[in-house]
Length: 201
Image: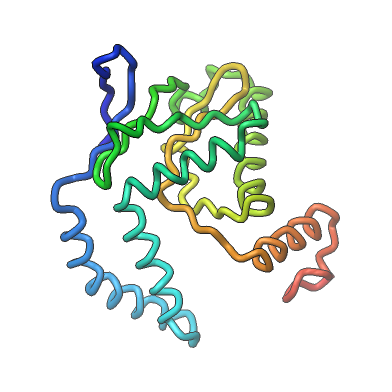
């Protein structure tokens, strides 16, 4: 849950508070989740499910650690310091723990409103370009794959900028993987379908 608050020094902040005991609840539910997902996976693939499950489990557990997310927010802010279209709220260190994440309050247009006809198609297109570039810059340049880029984790500004609130589900990928994605994207953009494995030109 995310709440608005005011610090003693008058600064407005957004406070993300973890549900009580959610850590224990999630860990207890992982066994059941693995059983269900393994059954579904087996219906569509003969591949070994174990590596997929380990990835899912690790990402879910990482999202419970708000100190990790705070580190990723700081890193994202540094990496995008020269990208004015992206706003990453500053972390309030003295009010952040493993279960509580406090950030500066950065207002923005909610996703549902941003997608409405209230705003011009040109502005919505601009927001789309900014989000697209942010995601693929993260993957191809910074080797950070944001695995939960849904609109509820973003807000939009009338000047075309985008606010990134959530960095809880982010994985650092190896350089060869990032380069592989970059080559695939380049092939798609250049219309070179024949260079994509499994795709006929």
